[in-house]
Image (cartoon, rainbow over all chains, first blue to last red):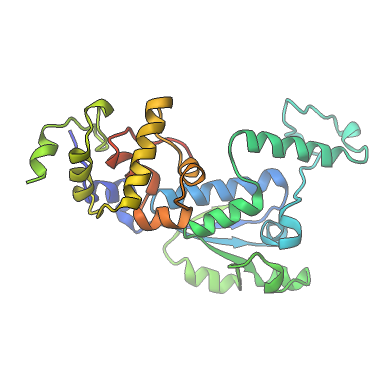
Length: 170
Length: 102
């Protein structure tokens, strides 16, 4: 029988010095959530979190895009069974917006926040958020285009920063 | 001295109270001391909310629910209960380990 103790809590979270390096490389609505949920779960478990947003993943932290991420209805074999949209139907204009709206509602029903609020949440929880320098150059973005609190970082700097961390690539 | 109170209480392998009904404020204070958390009124706001939620729903509230339903925001939760706010708050409140991932 274990009594509550600081030591026990530290044991339960890997002696309190675990660090997670999360790389988010995709910017669709469905793929924005896994890195955010994992980052939040890690922070709730006392694990340090460094998040690197690269390529399409940049959309998740780009002010103009983060609120209107879309789920693909064409060429997406994973379409949720309750949507059940065949590719040819998915090609009809407006289908992606409709499916995205439905997915947003399902996410809200589970009490998960919309993407912009979720980013704020993980930053409030202490996760550090970085935009990939090279991807930003390619997309003509500057730090001002990113959500407040995010910083621009090169891949090598991210490697230095995450020395000894566990890595998750999404 | 407060360690004596904890000897009278049953905890599971993760260190959470087996019977939430057996909890009282003195036990909560003793758990907080063991976790090295100095309780303030702000902590009690969270603990009392967690107790109330558990009574109504049978589950400890998620961190998100605590921040939505009380005036304690996310940043403050991490300051009040560093190293795992939902788990540590539930632990002090005498509740089982929370399983919600938000």
